[in-house]
Length: 438
Image 1 (cartoon, rainbow, N blue to C red):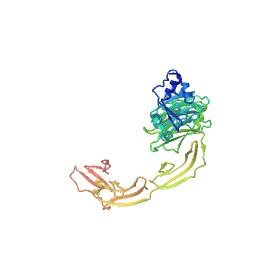
Image 2: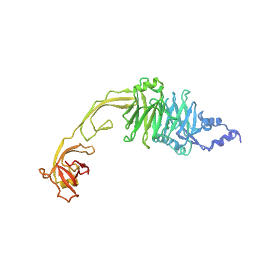
Image 3: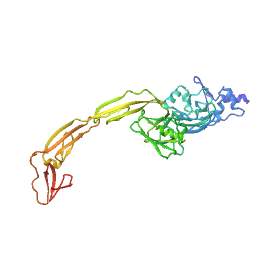
Image 4: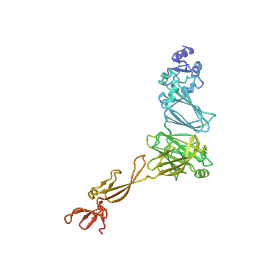
């Protein structure tokens, strides 16, 4: 069989899928060309893209997580299962990088493309990737059983480091291998503890910067703190973030000093297991027009929610709020809580009742002594009720005592309006504490 005959035999193994720009062929576990057939001749026959041979014979295995340095075009062989996990891709470089996903090396168009700007991060969740795959129509059935190829290439001769993780996951930063912090970059924190390094040259010369945090469960906050010079160095700032609109404003003087002295800062992030959050670092924030003042008066015991936070005590403060990307705004907040109105109740109690503890029906407070007591009745998110309760003898003009008991026995009596316990020549209160018998 001549050269052309061998090519015809090989061609018969290919299946064409129309309408998507994708050509699918039966592929062995490692492409082996028949004798006399070159990759270039096969590429010419199928009018394949110039990258066909590099895609087939120079691909690296793609498996999460990816952590590699790119200075030229690199091909990866992936699986549909990998792609349908979504993707979070970080690119540390001054130029952009593009990742193109092809169903096969003979595909004429990428299934989808992800371009990441310099020192940026891009994400595609599972729903978006499935949408891209569904646009391929019937080709999806073939794609699930084949090995898609990813072409990654820096722009303009760029050089940088790329991390690739499934969606909602991110690289683990430690003191030994911390993740660099760049302005405006998204960082996924899916592990309970992560460490990031803020290089001094990335700090604002004006010393103005903030960190924004976002997570689904605002009842499980994240702790942020900064150390100076080394990862385990002096702590210089700390904040707790629990919602998506409040930010961690970094101290301007601290940043200016660190930049002048060429000292890096380390950002430590800690949160509960099972929480996934994202944070962003921004230099030189823009300031939107100040929000209208917020003032409210409420009764003590209730709470007032302002900008996703709950307050239950008098307070006056300036709230700093995130608006969009690198823009903040301020709002003056003035909250006042009124004291509950005093209610009065006088109860005549038999001394025998005090001996066991008298339960006041309105407050459920237990009384053992005569006299005046102020009691607050507190219920969740209800106005506090305040009572002054006066407990007095049924016969308040006479001292009432229990009948005499044999010498040495324990007796009860009321002295000066207070229940006491007598034993021999000693006197005790109802808590068993000895008191002066004069």
